[in-house]
Length: 279
Image 1 (cartoon, rainbow, N blue to C red):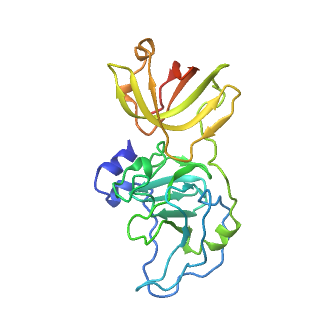
Image 2 (tube, one colour):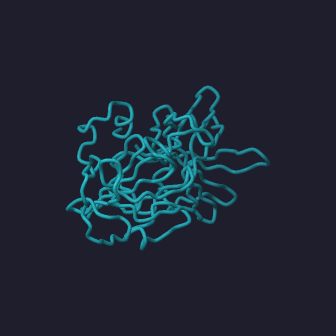
Image 3 (cartoon, rainbow, N blue to C red):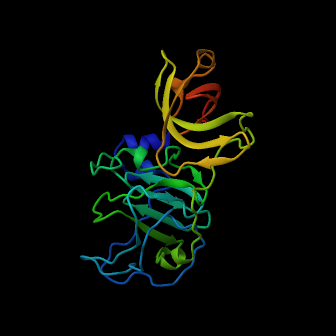
């Protein structure tokens, strides 16, 4: 599992394979000033502010990005479709047309704190894997103040096939969205009448008791409607023994969701069907 390898080992260049992070020039002179417009989805959902601070003079270098200021845990979505890569605090996307984007200073704190614990459940979407193809508008992660950030913001860089470019015109024209794009496997496998379907990435599992704990990525109702999450959401289920005997929860990856079908009986949930995650 490439993504787990990236996080579990030292972040060496070789570990990124064909999709290393694009590198902005560290120079104390003007950056390329050509005005370009790349169609994209605005990378943040919700209230934010920014100005054209690309190429502004900083301490010994020129700023290579637009800083989009927002509250911590503001959802970040993929501005373009393409192959995603990521490391601690940072993501990047390779578009099929040669354009790339990079964002950094993702959240490194437990929500409501400033503990800097680098819990990836509060930094990135739970179903993200290094090398995945993501759709524009898909949830990527959350705004933070990690690294040398002086306040919560997304440092957003844009690269043409020829190098760094000013993201400001593209951001000004970008399509804004109120919710991440709906991503769910087997959309037609909707729950039966009176039931719901949760897509959940495993976080903890106790085989003896059937207790399952995970992160919700999407839910589907019996009318087919799908809602994707835009903030970290944890759920628990009690798996019945007859279903446990048919699956192997111990082997489930943590970055691919299982489909859990259930009905509500008062304040209880009764699991009726489990579809194991893709590998």
